[in-house]
Length: 386
Image (cartoon, rainbow, N blue to C red):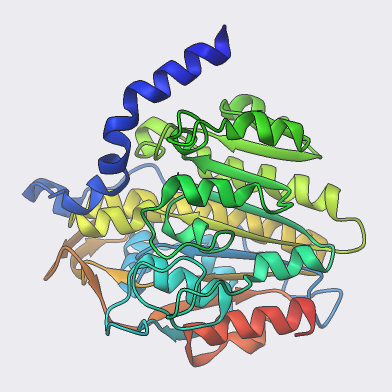
């Protein structure tokens, strides 16, 4: 009965789900949203810079979608001058251009990071000729490593999709969801339930996931209790809500996925990607409030990764963005109150370089100016020897 009710709810919303996937791009901020007045700061810890190995056994790759230097600085001011990301003492910059445009979208930007190739805007895990290219997650699986994805967006959205799917268009959400069943990914947590059931092809991917041994859950209180095995955590019909609605979903999901992957990996190690999706959406909306809230939420997820890496001693943490959004310019602020004021020349993406932060064994490889495809190549060489 519960399963039938869930399907009915999803079917009722399917007419809006395609629009809901991209509605954030049309959002506009009220003038008052361009100033973040400050909130309650969280404590930041600085961790050891000494590690057990020269090369990593595990990689935790965190992507702040749309996160430029100004977005990072807005978070730094918003949290009274401290971020977990400051543990990353090796810093570089990534060029983000796609194969067909000076300004990339998240699909081509994500594919460059996941597959190490330049491709056209809208492409998911395929080259400019729409031929599938192996992702670093798939390569890790092939070598027996545990793998995972976490996102505040739908797990079928462009950035997470580019690590596990191969489709010619980013809006092929049901096809992207079906691609998850072609892999042995250990854990994925994010929205996108609507693309796994109530589908045009009548497949119930939740049933198929269960048949493959996955625990399927949509309640974060239950998800965070899972310590091992395979987990499909689908936490929203399409995207998870803003911070006030979803709460600590991202840092909790990051911590949970790390725990599961660490327990599943044995001596092989693991690769996981974590996306803070909605930094980008705040940029599209030109909302400083939205950006700072999600930048701080993302930084707390970075903190979970670094906390584990510091204790483990064999984990590399790499933090970057797929592109910058909004052209955010900090025009005022106050470290004492956390106030941030900004202006925006565009509601779209820009072409500027984005920062690359790294912590752990191999972190020194990620300094200087590099192409986004080089970020992929460096991670793959360090983790898999390729």
